Length: 161
Image 1 (cartoon, helix red, strand yellow):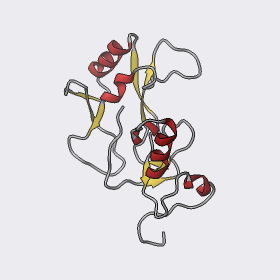
Image 2: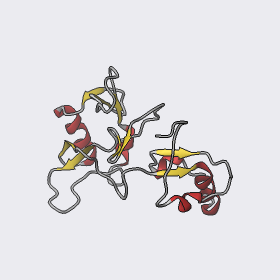
Image 3: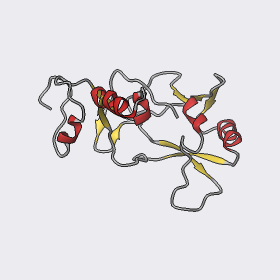
């Protein structure tokens, strides 16, 4: 589903609270990757999580807004039926305690890196294509500085914690 732009979020050992905690499981698939992804169903990116009322940090969305603007309960049969109809096979919404991640629990990219990738590819990429949790604007405008950060500590805000 589409991501959300947040003003603040809680980051823990498991990544951002609520991030990648919901997934559609392809019911008829019995291999090691039963999850429905946007590469299999690009329309999945048109569905967006929706909080009717903002609750406690870490709460999962109660509803999903469909591409047609209809709100459906996250675990409702209507949502699974709508996604399954678009995919062409039955799916089931699953809640995962620690999330499902391609590589790591948090993904950070610099806007300068995205811009340079676009220049090298001769395209104008959208930063969301990279599915980052955090987009950083660098003080030194050199791309690919993220490579130097591996194994380091990334601090946010002004506190010592």
